[in-house]
Amino acid sequence: MATVDVTEKDFESTVSAEGIVLVDAWADWCGPCKRFAPVYDAASEKHENITFAKLDTEANQGLSAALQIQSIPTLMAFRDGVMVFRQAGALPPAALEDLIGQVEGLDMDEVRKQVAAQQAQQS
Image (cartoon, rainbow, N blue to C red):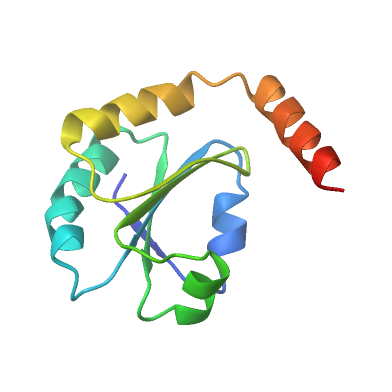
């Protein structure tokens, strides 16, 4: 599957979908973003069951601010609507593959329990 562009209008519906969604927050002027793009695109072709989204931080500044993106590229991973990973910086191909494997291997019932416990502590 090729990458899909997300905007402020469709970000929430994209990341809250069932399954795995990776989001690459990037900008056209960003050198590391341009170097990471081919790695991300290649992974999207290899993993057709995963949604690979690209968020242009310049065109979606409100969403970028809401997500508190301070460095790019920033990679986020969502599974069944839950953010399970977020990190600034480009990943080499092997690290991206490792991340994908880890996200695929998550026990989402356990993740939901942990999220609920954290929310209860914050209340």
